[in-house]
Length: 270
Image (cartoon, rainbow, N blue to C red; front, top):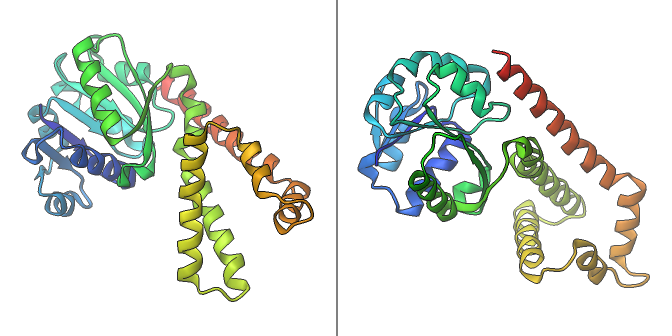
């Protein structure tokens, strides 16, 4: 099974690194084509490199389209004549629907897998939501299920829920990093060295996520367990509530989801 990447930016490289770490695919069966850093990526991970997108399609069984959403259909137009019914196209961009890719390839028998990975895949701590079109066979679905579960928390979901997934896990790492930066900035303001602040804050977020997932407790209950009556934490919690912290987060995510829906509508009209 040969797997190729057309484009390999941050998200594509995160997926590629996750696949390599899974050890389900030999390095010799991995290929990349990226005009800006394809050769660099190939040397970094000891995989194969091609200059032309169409060569990736001709040589590989599974093709990950890891380019920006605004050039997706330009790339598909370049490769569509080489996409036969045995090839599997994997997308990983917001707003690019299964139907829009199928229409662009202009082959109703094409096999398409839509995914929404997130950046923490680079350290095998990410999430992947995925959906198949009707042409993907059961044994192929099982392969992807095993692959995705090897490289992150994987959830097969209905395609109509992808916009919500993008808000919850696809875009949210950016929000998490902003939160890390803000917490660290506050500590630095009070005199803590930045390296120590980042280490403490980063580990705290890792620990909170693990505690939440493993304890099975409601996040509100865990929050309450830190808030002693009349203590320091409840003062901070009160200020966050007064500042509209929850509302700001919810609005940010719903705005992200709205943008994803707009992009999906645009892609279906192409």
